[in-house]
Image (cartoon, rainbow, N blue to C red; front, top):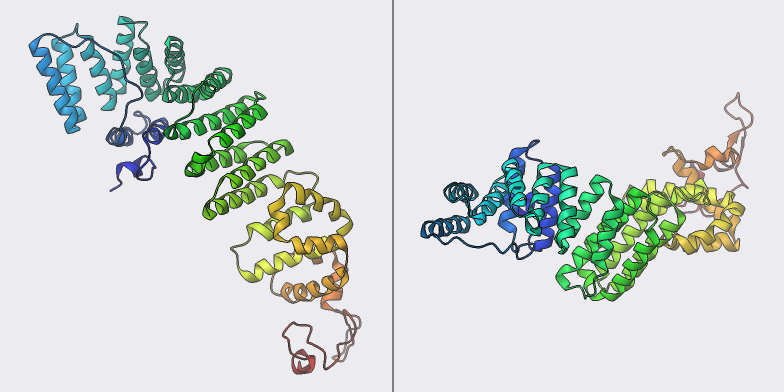
Length: 461
């Protein structure tokens, strides 16, 4: 049976902020109408893991009558036992018996929401706001109740009112900004997130994940609303990474996930690719762990693979090289060798076209260039390029009889004749063949690459 962390998609030891973010993400996906059992499971897991409140909460007057005080103690006892249904029932009974005590109305609303009775929670949150229309805490709880119920428009308006009345803690701002994203109010969402990030205080260590989430939501809304804040957001993020570099490595996975998600959904522009790649390079400098540096390099390669296909300055051959030199690292060794030979031979044939592109690879796609730097340097210098071609062609010709799908012989059929040989006169068993090159001497190394003399290898055949 899944534990509470697994239900919320978390690892053990997740922070209170991570627990809250995971909860709000899950309840959006599993509403009480669509999947009430899953919703209740998520709600239970959240309550079990929650270790701190969003803020201190409203300062409500306590009851004075002895019977009311006794009921308050009973509610607290049920709460410590973790019995949500009994807490809810006790709160409802207390409110029925003492309808003028606003603390029981508030506790009943919270207990109903915690027990999954979101419809009743909404009605009672609305009643609280009616009673005290300037109470920011009541507006806050009304906004969350609307959100959990799936009332996006009403939730946005309630969040807006709570913000106006002074709700400013990080959890409130992040949740409000997500509601702005869902409702299409990008200007408002960007405004409140910038305000959150610009507060004149130093971020505490446990708050760093919230700041990272704020930057991700900013990038997301800027892209969704075509707002034009991309460079401003990135420049501020770079400043944040430099200022809090000591805490970045422990939050690296969250940050990398955010950047990778944005990179995958964002439309390609060279400016965006270069900017995001600079962020990854900065993270490499900040990190000290070899494992984390390896993660960053892999993500950079993946990001490059996703974006390079849109770079109109690069030829199809160069783009195929990404797959051969980077993405195909885990496939069968023979297929990988064939793919690399195919790309290299095409690059040699297209050398004059490829040379200007090598400068682009070196400056802007360094992980690609570094993988085959020796080959690219020889391609640039041109020294021994014909000998290299003949060497590659022999191996390629041998493998092409077993593997299909290559581009080289398809694009350059005359090289297939040189590599494989061609019948020039048919009709008898003694028909002569045209060799692809000069005749091999009996004592020369066999061209098949076995390392033996020709007379002891293919010459016998």
